[in-house]
Image (cartoon, rainbow, N blue to C red; front, side):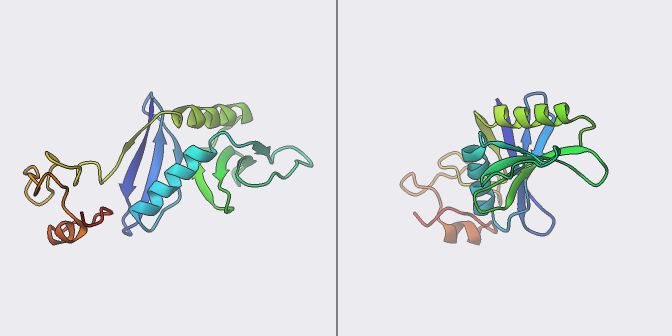
Length: 167
């Protein structure tokens, strides 16, 4: 089973990487403004993982509609792939260039395979997950009021942002 790792960027955005079973990063996302948007990007990648492949390296290639994977050559002459969502935005791209097109296709196939069953790891995984989850400010477990998770106001008061609505 592959995993997707969500990370906060230096400019307060979020991006995610798709990591194969062997630990190799096989795909990287664009940068999103919010954690919620990054999670939507992951859902888009999962939903569109089996889209058709548009091979832009062949003469007179047939342009496909969205969503689609694209195989192309970058400025350095390396083969790369990317997933373009229904809205025309690139949501995932190869983490590296490949000297052979067959290797790029193998990389794309690896991304597809690793997206079938995902383990998502991200900055929110240790926060506010219910009773027993760790509070970032103290490291102590939430005991909750009536067994509920803390709401957004409580999360902000603890010095953390959260996508959890007040409960």
